[in-house]
Image (cartoon, rainbow, N blue to C red):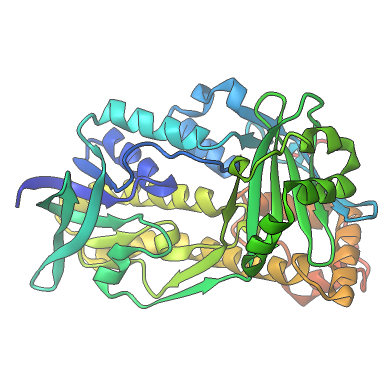
Length: 424
């Protein structure tokens, strides 16, 4: 082998970067390989939920995020396209200090993580380094073959971590069966200047139409607009003027800001998919983030769950090192700890795809009815915001009774129940 480390992480994305940083803090010799030539570029918005904020805070990074790149948001108002407000969720109901959503400008969090990783572990982040294959001995992973600067090299490691996304090459090399689902809808995102920046976020739901408007950074807005994956070419052919007009029809208050959308280069189209790996661990290897469990962005937890994976695996690594045991049996504790919350979020996001993205007027009517009922039910509304915030590991609706109450078909005698920390 050319290089020897304790852990090699393939991919410096939302989970891989945090894992490298967390392991560096524990004195674990770690090398993170990233095939891109440098830090991420391009248009991409992000909502940093409270559970992600706590992780960054524990790493000493939350207060170091550039103030001009972060906008705290207390309320998200769900509205009907062409109609009124359906429901408002209030992050102030959550326990402080993490009782806001933080809308960040593109890659602000990611770059802070990677900069700190390069500082704490100067030789531990390699850009332009591509994964080629795992190296096995007696059926156990003992390292990887990579390519850097056009040259192959072999890296010995006690643990190989695949943090390389939904189409993970590490996962394929491990032979782990995986179901990858591509959703019919993609999301066009853009960040525009907005001198009259709204205080609250707005999420408009229609029939086969979704449009999110989030205050971001200083005097800017982050937009996300649902587009069928097979309709992007038609959208582009119609021109930016047509899209601006549609946005203004949905949210007339920000028509002036939408006029700032002049070229497609100000946007990006993000496909949506779900990944379900049969297992997240093997002898000498583990998967984190989208390589193990990608989910629809409706969950608002994709990056947060990758970060939570990284923290859980980093907490386990020192004991595995002490015992010199990175077997699948030893690593299973990581998967057992993380899988229930992840699978709940995947199921919830899939339900939201059915109801939020629907083109069926009857399903849209039922969806709107549920939103309006939840708006009057403090117990269920708190559960909804707690799940989005990553502070609840079970679904917002506990069984059929909750679902019937959410649909307004049964009365809820506990509708005013709230956790003790919530101010009256």
